[in-house]
Image (tube, rainbow, N blue to C red; front, side, top):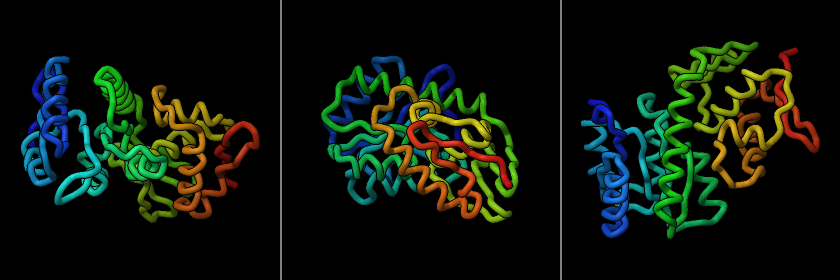
Length: 235
């Protein structure tokens, strides 16, 4: 597998509507990116074997294999665990948005959307991705929890647990700010990014899931009423 073209950012657009797909590829190429479009999962997976993109625009409603299935497969592969992925879909309900984010999407934009807004979200996702790769610690061990950023793995009591991309980001944020009270807005800014406008309830939902997956260590996540959360020292 090769990397993206030198000096240019490679973006894959997986969209079965030829009009939307062609429009996106044209707009991205005009904006200075290198863009390739695919109408179905088989075409996309074949391209992934040849070259890994810097970012993926992924529609949910696709023939043969839907976007959520593609997203889960990508996040389960260590090569693509941190690749920025923006979901594109005609579905705009909170449930659909939550399903995409829970599965590991970095952002979600409902059709119809403006090209300028999409470009801004692409730039934000690329900034967050590059920043996380530079700033991310290699390994954090705290009590029963071990977080390996390079391998994108978490173990609790030596047992490997499966986290979504956002749950992984939450845990990493907590482990690097043990004992500090973090507001929901601070958590949103650090894990979801400054451009996310989905509301703070998303934080509560993800933390509930993270607590459950951490088992006894999940009790270290304390709810600070009216403020946010604190990750306490292990007792």
